[in-house]
Image 1 (cartoon, helix red, strand yellow):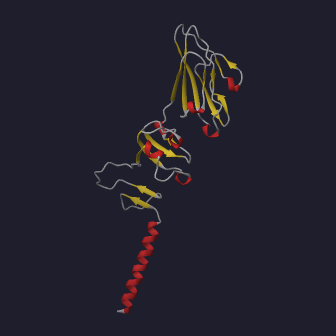
Image 2 (image 1 turned 45 degrees about the vertical axis):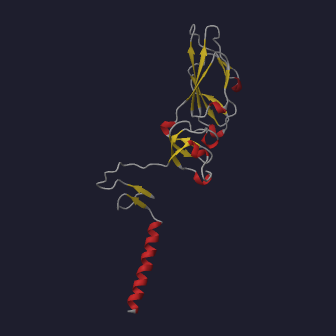
Image 3 (image 1 turned 90 degrees about the vertical axis):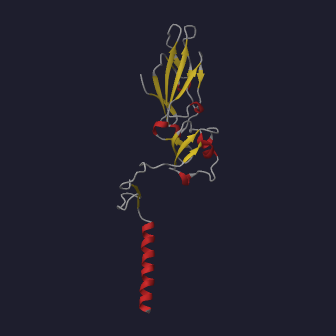
Length: 213
């Protein structure tokens, strides 16, 4: 009888140890097959539930006021923004459309197709841009010109940083009036460049680089 009790206790201890090890190992969700990664989600045989993985659905207001602040420990976190309530500011300054976002340690960044270009249309005359005018990866500047004001001076933002590397500014024009193409002077990178409509620039580390023509 005593031996039986000892064997029973030993079986319980072994079971706890094995289960504890499994809890710390890879996991398959939806099937009993061995996992192929840390977390392997598969469609259970015969399941009638739509397949997919749904990230936490939140609104911009929540991201602006989370119960616990997002920091370095949350780098890589993914959410799906459903509503653009509250202001796009601070960590949510780039949350400008509905869709998936990931946290890069300081801000929420859009994933893939949600990144839409920023469109800027200035009235006839010169324009000076700043980093705040270029929240997305691509910015399109439309210079409105006319026969009476064919020349537009565009001053590119000089307050971008290394984290903005890769941002692109594309310059085009709405050639109203006589259809005059504007001359564009890029003051803060030196010199005047005539006829830069249709030209793109990319920010690299601390300066602008001309991509085309």
